[in-house]
Length: 133
Image 1 (cartoon, rainbow, N blue to C red):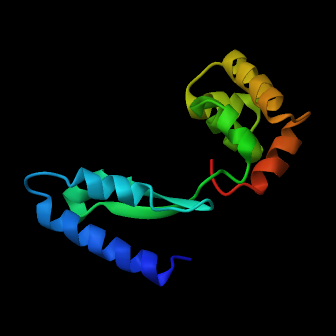
Image 2: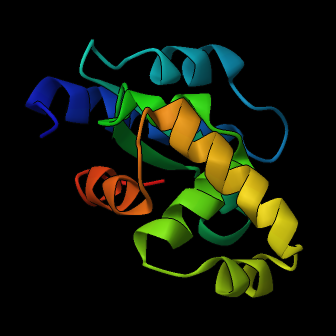
């Protein structure tokens, strides 16, 4: 949960951003906002939201993944791991990702190896505890 002081600081930083959108972005404020998090969390800033909302979207996130092994996976391997966790067989994963079954097998092997798992069900169990891919 965000503390009252962090919430006050966030309101003032976003207020500054809203006023300067048309000409320049106050990069110092953005940098300090991104670094405002503590050891347990950090802030992510989505500047694309300015086009729709007029201000960036700021999200407080855990500093580290609840499953550190995910950091070792490539983006495609994380996709494959997520589909493995849903119980999809190789052919279904290949269809979902528009890749060959042979490529899926390579990714599955790498996912198992990098995550230190011995089976697809173990990957599913590990990812069941993870917050997000």
